[in-house]
Length: 262
Image (tube, rainbow, N blue to C red; front, side, top):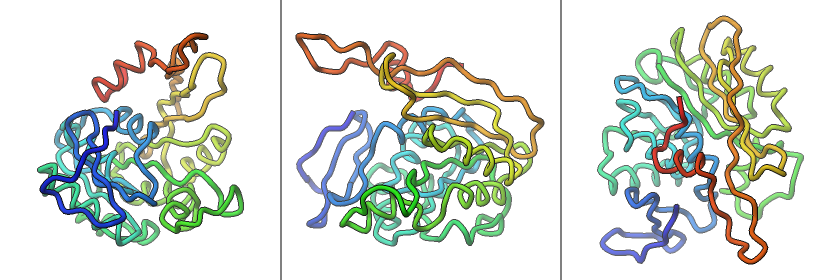
């Protein structure tokens, strides 16, 4: 999925590297920041096409989920909200080197301060890969960039859902990737924000593993009715002779198309 490039004509800071994602997106990443992973790709793949929609990503990081969504033309424009100045600036640079100026628009802001007026009206789609860990759990990373990205320093799951609820029009969608062991918190937060979960998929590393992620699509002011899709198994069983992990056909199709089956 990711190949590290040698810097060419793209200026990089001392703490940055340049990667190629899916052979189509060039991505500047902070060496000490939280880098692109499977959860961001699956989040983008879980988004259904809404070609005329305006979208907001809450917590953009490097912007990779927005770029994956944009290059597939799933929406018309994405406002990518990031609270850290350095990463908001990085999203703008990444948009420029990929020819996505005007399509992916960075905004440095605290999501807890956002409302519909922040974007001149209601939004049709909000998506997010929120921090998974409480501030009092796990080891504190020595790099603030990673700590803020992984821990709920600048808002918990309730804050992300509340922001989505304020931004979305009735019938608008909120798509998120989250930890299964905190699923109850997500469901309560969605309901409190008038976001009704309508579609959910558990993701497993392999058939012997517990789910490592849960993808959810919720709809603003919708009636209760949740569809649980078949679980996504990422990897085929390990081979005794070769420890290389091979994607299942289902996972490979999702990686190839950046879309889940209908």
